[in-house]
Amino acid sequence: MVKQYKMEEDDIVRNEREEEKVGGVMKNKEYILVLQRILQIMDEGVHVVDPEGNSIIYNKAMARLEKMESQDVLRKPFTEVFKNFEDGESTLMQALEFRKTTLKKEQTYLNKDGREITTVNTTVPVVKDGELVAAIEIAKNITDIQKMSNTILELRKEIDCPQVAKEHRIKKYNFDNLFGESEKFLDTITLARRAARSSASVLIYGETGTGKELISQSIHFDSDRQSKPFLAQNCAALPGSLLEGILFGTSKGGFTGAVDREGLFEQADGGTLLLDEINSMPYELQGKLLRVLQEDYIRRVGGTKDIPIDVRIIATINEPAEELIQSGKLRKDLYYRLNIIQIDIPPLRERPDDILLLADKFLEKHNKKYNKEVWMLSEKAKEKLLDYDYPGNVRELENIIMSAVSMALEDEHVLTDKHLIVNRRKALPQQDIYELKDGGLDEYLEKIEKSMIENALVAQGGNISKAAESLKIKRQTLQHKIKKYKMETEKQGKK
Image 1 (cartoon, one colour):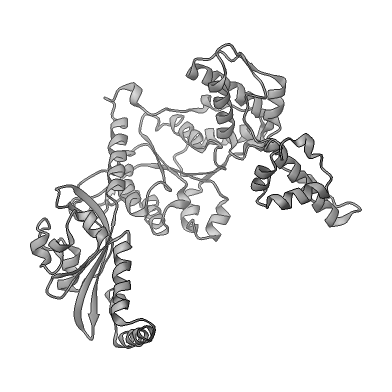
Image 2 (cartoon, helix red, strand yellow; image 1 turned 180 degrees about the horizontal axis):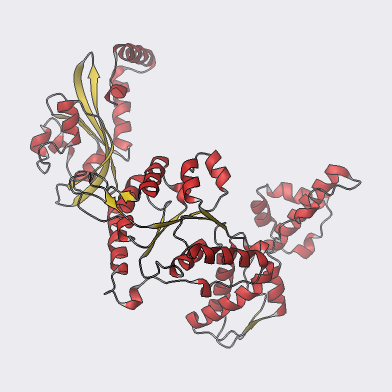
């Protein structure tokens, strides 16, 4: 690894030639000034020491991070300025003394103000002709993110503790909380109920808002693990370096400032761990997860002890698995290991019979939440709900009803179409795509274009500027097309 960062003779010669070329346009002093300016505007901290351990570069970002003044650091020995590091802990000193390269390592230490900070550091020695000429460290501040991850772990531990007050527990969902009468949805529920009778891994595919976590919780709380923890982690919510610590825990001494802390696998022992959007997990971390699934033990970050665990994994994805594997976002071997039981949740547009049923349930729910007495939906309101394709699925439908109920007046007991804020654009019928008639492709494409323009105008209340923006075309272009298709803009409203 160190060899990757050594400046070999050929590289030095090449660099010197490049500098000579630059010198033809820019003087050396100006060239150095530009490099210094770049260092000062970087968000990452940069600290460089010479072979004797004296600081020769210390940019503003590093000074802000460590609450130091540049003049208190530059041209002074590192070990005299930074006394909080124990012997051998500093990656910068390791690079200097042992020519050790360190990539993306977490470090936690106290800055000048005594505040604990956490960084992800990359440190490399710089070698020329076999001689060490400097050591460089680049640090990214992740203090706030680290605190957030620690808080997540502590809160989840508290939530799982039986002594915690009932009102602080997470909402538990089961199959009785899932509503629907369409055939596709009922088939999904039947499969999920069967999955609850097993301890095998489950992979759930569904678009955003279809209720993947509700299905996951229902499986857990209908299984023989229901008295054990159910924990969930969105894999897209945190950087990979922190996600690993949250999942597997940390071991004291594993990295600077590390403490012994259980990860989610240990906290969920005997229960279920939901890994939401697992395709967002870094590829190399997916490999570590695969080993856990195969061997039923984990090893904390920085630890050497193998810890046996009994955790059922439910993973979710919101894109087809084949596409994720092809694009390199999901390991094929992990997919096969997770996909012991596969559950596909149909989008709401494929279960139109459930729209009004769900709307009534949400009406009842949010009446209680907002202390309202809205009894029913008008016929036009029902038509409006049915005439929509719900790209946000069940979650979007609930948001529409929640918004309408919350804004209803105290004496209003019926939701009308005017209460419902929806985009009335409806997807083009799938079956019409291949029905080319006498006019051929050109005429058919014109019909599609005209229909899209009409939908956009209706959705934007006849406002041409907003309609053009939604169609991602210029206003003048839209006006030309309106004239071309002889649309009656007066009836569309404002231009």
